[in-house]
Image: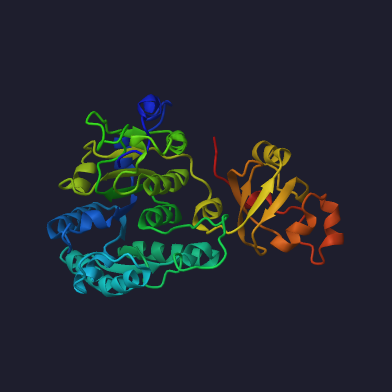
Length: 413
């Protein structure tokens, strides 16, 4: 993962654990029982098209060894579009969405067949799960998905998961631009992190075509150093955001440093460790679990409760409430609910029960929560004391626009 920052060398003290009693990388990997492994297109496919069979079967054999050792594995895989493009004899992977979806429809069956036949050689049953945005945004479907995967694991079946590119509408929505919209996933990096969070995984492994996170861009700096372990991801993300785009080292590396770090943040905030490593390294999975120091390892934070994880990460957010400084302080420091008096602006449309962003006066999102009132109702009572709700809203719900128990904070420093 070529880093987007001009220089992360100054942050080395944040790239190793600095608290007594924190388990090290080897201990965490050794104790990890439930593991999500994400295989990207770049490591599954040859440059000229088609599956890189030697590498593919190496992954299968390593995963089979982990299962035989008693570990629970969930596999998130790309590759359907590339396989479909090969089957359709296209000169290159398509860019237009309808053709991408057609390729996915052709390639997904072939991809699953390859996995099924390969794992059968190790007496491992597989199950296909094709997911879309609403499988996470809708809480009932989210809980059903959680139960289904947990049952598959109980039955010793390997879940093989991919985004359902043939029907996903994330990229198809048209009309008015909604600047408040934050999609829960639109790539398999984020999907793998949501699966890890959803299923209480101990470890997320993202295998891509780069070695990990570097202190500078290795394509531009021959002295770039791979960062072995990170304990403060937020500070690195903050520094990346502040890097001027005109700087040579600010270009994103292959594999997309942004989506990788966003996925890692979801995992680590949920109490799950994460590792980003090169899937092109021979026998990478076997070597990682033999305690070889490959890739970049990200230490977890204390995990959020399940409902807060869903609010913070799993749902697509389409609207926002802007609050004043007093309300922000009350939420962050006094464990308060969000009252109408503290809200200064309602952005975009939402219904009761939708998850909305909570923004400070500068427009920075610091929390998300489940709204007790719709956007039209919220606009009527914004800035008012709670005792005015009866006069303004016929079907009064709560005193708070967002109840404390239904708030998840995105910055927990």
